[in-house]
Length: 190
Image 1: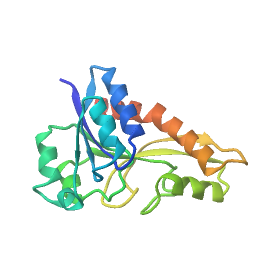
Image 2: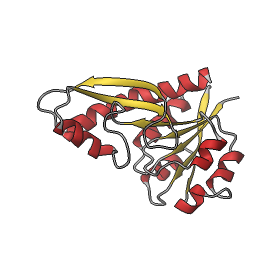
Image 3: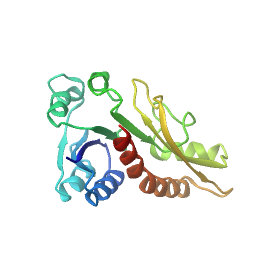
């Protein structure tokens, strides 16, 4: 039986779509559900275009025992993946699915992590601080932003003339290449 992945995302969903496509080419796992805290998020449309169930929810539903948690328990999931999900993930779900929730962050944690550090804000800080390298961090989610146990980090060199936009391109390339493979490794070893 295929491993079952549920993805949470808040935005356009390019990482989510990449993960969906990756696992559609395998017999090992599949994305069975995409959830978003924004009812007009492009990620929901991308998921539906691939035949994946896509549901939006409110913040109250996220933290309620009768909301998202109840829905997740019915989905028989093996792993929850946060791919550009901007809300703090609730303890109620973390407790129900210990060591089954992972996140990707567009920097080498612990640098440039924490509340409010996401997307272009991270890339701007990296450039402002003249970093010579950056990368991605895939980590388990705990009750604090970006503080869970690190699973994997992938690095990329930066040039002196980088802009937040050029850094973003390098980070997206790393995410697309590495994130689905690391998800598969986690599922195979779990």
